[in-house]
Every structure is written in structure tokens, then in C-alpha cells.
Image (tube, rainbow, N blue to C red):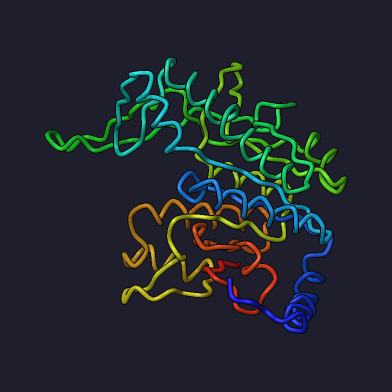
Length: 295
């Protein structure tokens, strides 16, 4: 790190003031992805940044994924996964491992790092206190032979239907930092695995969060010439999906952003989670880093 003079350090802190005031006492939901978690040092830096937010009277809520960690554990245990339409089919054996990894090792690791940095993190999943109820996800694929659409059963995979804020309201604003694993319960009491972006969107919407930050492994939404688009309205975003500028894995991410905005989130930002202090850059500097999507 380059040596910064004490005066410059003071100036940097001073320049952060208007940004801190903008988010004072506001709730910010941060989706922390499997790849963005990266190595231990990256995770510890992320944890420090979250504690800093809490110290400046912002209420952070962390939602995490864990795809790479789940894949590693399934491989270690010799459990084969089937895929359909690019989505993992989660059978009874797989959901047990998914829950173990997400609500167990990954969740508690993040909680540990935040607490080590001086925060008070509480590790939960959407199952706790019936926080998130979900219904089973169904997807259709077109059979290439017959050209007929058929439904595929993805197993224990769900879409959030209802978020109950009873528990989160007991934690937010009391110096406690909720860290949520994206698992939910169905009406029948089954555990369902929910896409972490979608889960974060549902929670942020229910909390009417000021910001939802999606930490991913890309810098944000790129235009046709691969340049970063700093801001997009929902209308612009829909246009870019229609004309193919937004494609592949970015489509569900942007759709999650649109859904969160419709639920009442003020702004959603897609940022590169591998960038050091991405959260602080986005919230406390004029620069911002990713793509802000707003109504």
C-alpha cells in the first residue's frame, strides 16, 4: 500500500461525510457471491468493510451464496449432480449437502470474519423464524427433437414467495449484523435452495432497503463495446436485454435488480466483488464502481 500522509487520510475521511449522511440509519443489503468470496484475505477485507458500515450508523444485511463450495463438497463426497437447462437438479442427497455447506461452513466462516473484525454478526438462514417461505421452482425447456416445451423438476429448489421481517427487525439497528444463507421453507415444510441473488432481492425488497449491492465476478453491466455502463433505468435495462447487449448469466442478475426495485428497493448496484473495498468505494466515494440500476 502506498503511504498516505495523515493529512490526506483526514481529507479522505472528510470527503466521505456526505455519503455517510446519505445512508445514515438506512438498511443496505449486500449479496456476497461464492466467487467474490475468493481467498481468506479478500473475505477478511470484506468483513472489515461490513463492520465499518455498521460503525457509521448504516445497517448492513449480508446474504451469501456458496456455489463453488457446494460443488467442492459434492465432489468430495462423490455425489453426482444432474443439470437441466444449465441449472443443478437438487435431489434429497444434494439438498442435505447444500444446507450443510450454506447454513453451516460458509455462513459461520463469514460470521467468524465479521466478529474477528469487531462486529457482532448473527448467522441465519431463511428457515429461521419462517423468514423466507418459498415455492418449488419449475422451469420449462424446449425438447430439441420434438420442439415441445416440457416442464423440468429441479428438485428442492425454490423461488421466494413471502418474507417475514419479525426476526430481522429484532436485529437491525441494534448493532447486530445478520448474515443470511439462501435457504427457505416450503408450505409443506421442505427445505428449498434459493438462488442467492433472488433471495437477496426478496429480502432487500421486504426491508425497503436503500441499496442492494450484488457483488459478482464482473465489473457491472457492459455495453456492446464491453465498456461499463455506470447507470441504467429499468426501462433501459429491459431494452438492453431485448437487444442482446445484456446476455447469458447477466440476464437473471439484472432481472433480480428489476424485481428488487419493484419490491421497493431504492437502487441496486452490480459490482465486482473481487475488487478491494468494492463496498466502500461504491457507498463512500464519488467514484462508485459498478452499474447502478434505478426506477
